Image 1 (tube, one colour):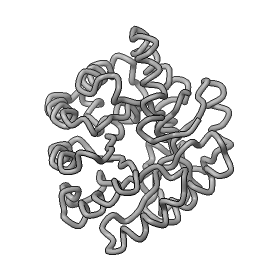
Image 2 (cartoon, helix red, strand yellow):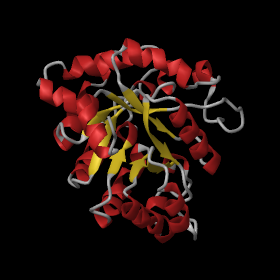
Image 3 (spheres, one colour):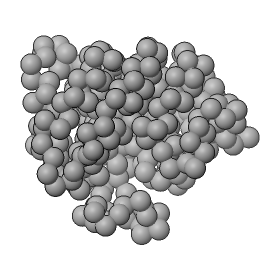
Image 4 (cartoon, one colour):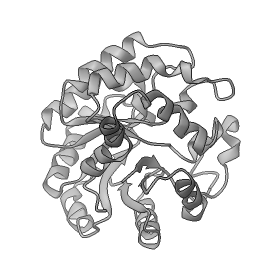
Length: 277
């Protein structure tokens, strides 16, 4: 089973999606399952993980509703206020939704760069394990130094780094990011999504070679059993199209064994998010 482990749906709202700047104006519109279904079929992808793009309970409900109506949505990563005093009650209710596989908070946008280490935030993380929920870590490179302390405190919690923690590909910056990735990868409860690459490069002039050093670092650090493919559709449309983004990673992994490719393009995501066929 081939899985796109990271993509989004939304009904575009100028205020709610104010993070979509002018250079990404092409994605200032609605993106719904009917827009993705044909692309997955064309590229022989069996299913996807729909990930939150808005921090609200309504977003989680919206994605779950879409998942109920589109069988290729194999799982949902929603949002919940991990710092809420009633977090356990909320998770108890969410545990009834079998397609809800985990949660994500947009840490990359927080003014408090080490929010993930706050006691109030970690109390929420501590509650996820009991219900079997995964946690997607969305950060910028400058927040990488905080992650080893977070993930080592919860060794039985499944974590995944989204978008390689957004290295400075556009400026070809790699040294500090590489050090941070290697320190995080020591923790075997952490995986990494190879996703969101093209929007960290020059949107109009990127080439496959721009990403090779960063892919080498992640594969060497995490191995082939803790990495997974994600398109970051429709955000990736600001720098290409679905097939081109997929071809980028297909080309990189073409020299890997068939087994390793199967892990990367589906089996790792299936295991991480506890997906059904």
